[in-house]
Amino acid sequence: MLRENDAALLIGDPGMAFAREHLHVWDMAALWRENTGFGFVFAMWMAGGTAGVATPDFVAARDEGLAQIEEIVSEYVQKIQMPAEEIRDYLNHNIAFQIDEDLKQGMQRYYELAHKHGLIEELKPLEFVMSDSE
Image 1 (cartoon, rainbow, N blue to C red):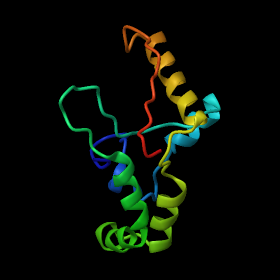
Image 2 (cartoon, rainbow, N blue to C red):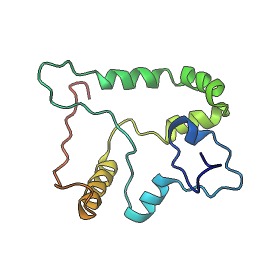
Image 3 (cartoon, rainbow, N blue to C red):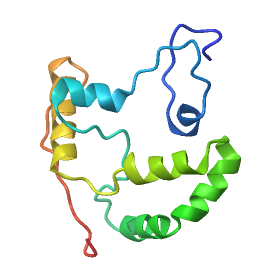
């Protein structure tokens, strides 16, 4: 992508393991914090209030994943060719497994800016529903 374009947004595994030589790389989370003072949520698991549909147990999925960090590190060392310590550090320090007040405020600011710039028509309040096991 970068051979044919002036810029690219790389996320996920490709964003972790690409050659950075001769490139200007910006960390979007760091820029967001620098400009707003808040954390940034790139993605999150969400479930709508769909009646009659079983809601996945996101808390159990998160807890299962956290209990298997070393297995995940071992698998990804082979998959994306990064040192185990970098992957472990990323999983333990760059991913938030719970939404705290800082991240809530960051999401609120994001939606306020999206509304201000006409990207969304209506600014609705964010609602958070915690599972019974939280």
